[in-house]
Structures are given as structure tokens and as C-alpha cells.
Image (cartoon, rainbow, N blue to C red; front, side, top):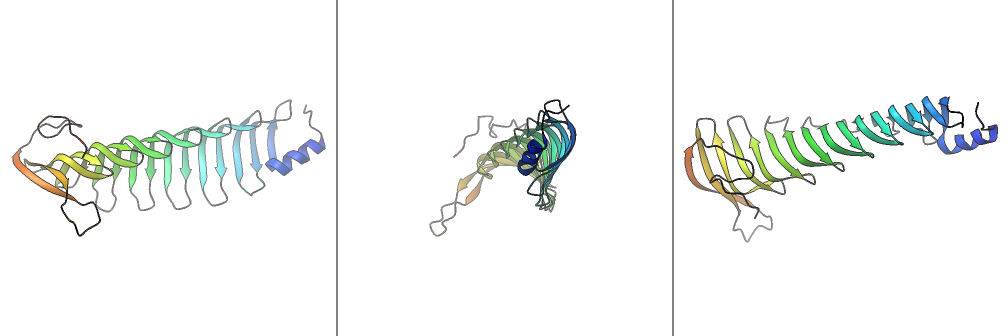
Length: 225
């Protein structure tokens, strides 16, 4: 039996909105329930000691929707977030942030499948470009392509070092005809342009060779320039 009186429920309603569902002996929201918040947003799912906890669905007034796990009133565990622009994230959450492994589908159809840290692409991941079918596979740091990675196209691929989402330093083009072109990306000597342009400098052509991420064509560790 709840210890809350009618005045307590009126105060709760003004702060937390309308609620229909289970409560514990202390009168807290506990178990299955549905809440309509004062701003019009809706949560339907599990509660524990007054907070969202367990499986639930949250409907935002801007059209977004989250379906998944909650822990102590925060998105935490596995869940899917549907954004108003049509994009979608399915994966791991830690304290309301995308963190761990997840798949993000962008409005244009591009997808990223990989590791996240604090809402940003961070770690190893695969980005697929829907308009060309090309892929980037490699390392990410704070949302940008960094360190060892490769661009994969329909008839060739580029393997090498990346800085700020652009190839830089030693790398090689691997052609599916059975040969490779080794070289490096350097900053172009262009005093007219204010942009930092990277220019491919070829060095040699060889047969197919093994490649270890983080190493250049000679087997030495690659460096950022």
C-alpha cells in the first residue's frame, strides 16, 4: 500500500507528468508503467525505484525514438535510437552515450559498423558508401580516419596511413589485376591554394605483397606527417 497522499501525487504529476503503472510500497514508480511527461514526451517500459530501469521505449517530441535498455534512468546497454532525419543507431550505450560496438545508418544510406566512444566513431570500424559501394576499413579517432586503414573499391584498393580522414604518408594501391603501386601521399607544393592538398608520389610497381596494418610497403612502421 502506498504511503503517498493525493497532494503528493499532484506534486509528482506536475514535475514528472502523468503516470499509469506499478508502484512499490514506498509509492515509487516500480515495475511496468507508462509516463506522459509535461513536455509531451512519452516513456513506456520498466521502472525501478522511481527511475527508468530495464527495457523501455522513449518517444521524443521531435519524432525521435529510443528502444532498448535503461539503467538508473539513462540509456545503458543495448538499444536502437531512431533519429528525426531518418538515421538510426543500433548498438551499445553507456550512460546515455554511444559507446562500444554499434551500427549507424545515415540518412543517405551510408553505414558505419564498428567501435564508438562518447558518441563518436573511435576504434576499428567499417564505413560503407552507398552511392559508390566503396568501403573504408581501419582505425578511427574522435570521428575521423586515423592511422592504418584501407579504401576498398570495385577494381582496386588503397592501403596506407590516414590523418584527419585523408591518406598521408606511405601507402600502396593494390590492383586486382595482380600488381601494386607503392608510393606516398605528400602535401602538394601549391602557394596559390590555401587548402592542404595531398599529392600521390609513385615510387615503384611490384607484384602482390603482404600488408600488415600499421606498416608501410617496406615492412617498417608507418608514420604520420
